[in-house]
Length: 307
Ligand code: NCD
Image (cartoon, rainbow, N blue to C red; front, side):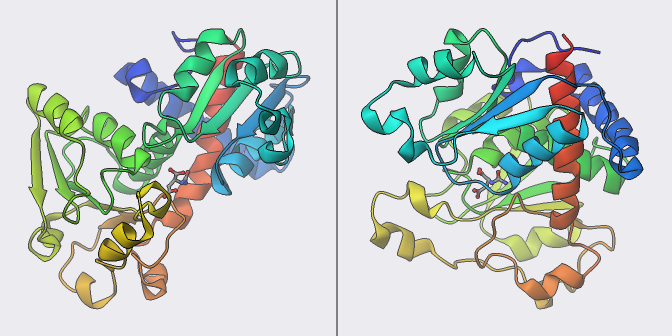
């Protein structure tokens, strides 16, 4: 089973059927992980990870996924110490790395960077975050986690909370989840609302985007609460960040009147938006997300490399 595209840059690259196939394939991958024996499915194939921004989960889960499929990974340990520091362009870096690898995963601070990379690269490019733009593989693992926990993706009451302006995970998630639901709740501090372009696109598709600052009011109806970190590194000045820092925090008191089946997701890293006391509640799904991250990335790697 392969994808109709060479690269995975945005959720828009995928049909809803392809999204469902990725999630089904990810479920299948669990057998390989449980068996503790690497599959030979991608034996001899090489993945290069090119991360110009910090990462723990995304990079390690891609490398783990490749290893579990029998392939191997290479990476630039510190991009600052590579030829990029000598002024090499992204295009030249890509043209170099494609000689060493069959597929490239890239994270870069510039919105649109993964798209440019895919235009020069002969090998598939996977966008692992382009500035404030998109983060499609995170969204696929979010969907996989929600589907596993809720048993479905359609007609769920979903709210996204936090920095909806600079957070790329919520940009991708808004487009993906509204393929299955007609309504999306957005809760953001003043000035950090979901970009008007995204809200406009969703409304044009007939979706109801409900922007509110009142979390308490909507919390009892929610099936999924997707919490995000305020993206400190994207603020023009530290003072701008200080104004909104710690503006919301999910704790046990707040969760007194929620549905018993509520799922709280977070792409991580968290700063202070979810209190650690929530970790032991039945609502916490953010650790499960990391497990789904490996499965979904195994599915994506096979589907792009076996094309
Ligand atoms: C996210 C990212 O990089 O956009 N992290 C991740 O991939 N799990 C979220 C974030 O940094 O806040």
